[in-house]
Amino acid sequence: MRGLKRLAVQLRDFYLRRPMPQAGPFRLWVDITSRCNLKCRACPQRLLPESQRRDMPEELLACLAEQVAAGAAREVNLFHRGEPLLHPRLGFWLARFRRAGALVRLHSNATLLDRARVEDILAARPHRLTLSIDTLGAADYALARPGADLERSLAGLELLLKRRGQRNRAWPKVALLLMGHQRGGAEARARLERLRGLGLDRVVWRAPHNWAGALGPAPQARLRACTFPWYGLAVLSDGRVTPCPQDFFGDITLGRAERSPLLEIWQGAKAQALRRAHAGGELADYPVCQACDRVRRPTLLGLPLEHLHNFLAESIFGWPGFAKAKPWKNRIN
Image (cartoon, rainbow, N blue to C red):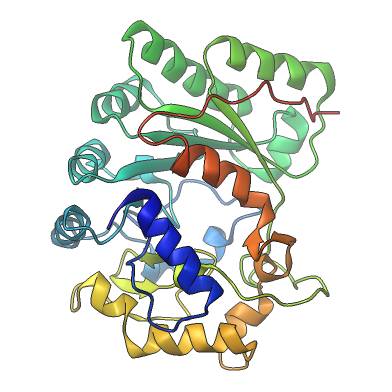
């Protein structure tokens, strides 16, 4: 089951709060590496135990690609807790999951974008590449990302856009992710317009979140049923399967991908119990869910409002093409 039909079935099962959905997960996060070269203030990766920093075994990646080809997921995010550009065979696996028939997405902090990696990405042709710069203000960037250099990151992004244009490649579509309130003045606005002139496809604006309590308490707001248990799965680099990328440390383990097929885990007793807990608003057995700010954010018809526009533009109306973004409003003060 693929595409809009799959999503419609998932949406129906979410609204009915069915513990056993008919459709498999729409999106799969594959933690190709949990290693990272930065210790950003807004990311819990810096808190990840050294024992969890590793590359996903090749045999597990191959197994997941085969399951995706058989319809286990429609979209694959080939990233999760680490910086995917650190993986020595990233290009190979991007191409492998693309051949499996998935819409393949990559997310990077852009600090490692050199010519070799740019050419590797362009050759593999993932559908979406989001570069999380977070802010275009030099002072704020230095505070948010100790040890990283804004100009170097932007130079890598510019190189990618230039080489994509020179090679006349349609893929990947490139988005810039900016987080929270933006400052930086005229210099930051000029950087944004330069990127736009080089062919940047989208700017995505997001509010920072608390990573299920790892980076602070959730606001005092009404708790809503989370869509993730009816929407996706995340496979950590050590093979544990979790229901949600916000569960950064894998506190809720639904199964192990090296032992059981994804669809079996998706329909398993642990996944069903989690859905029942969200349906009934009884999350005492899931402190990670209780501490998460995502289930307290505004919704539209029960769906997270903040991510709805991007989801529709990229995953629905942008498949297999890409929804042309309207000229973005400049939100940099």
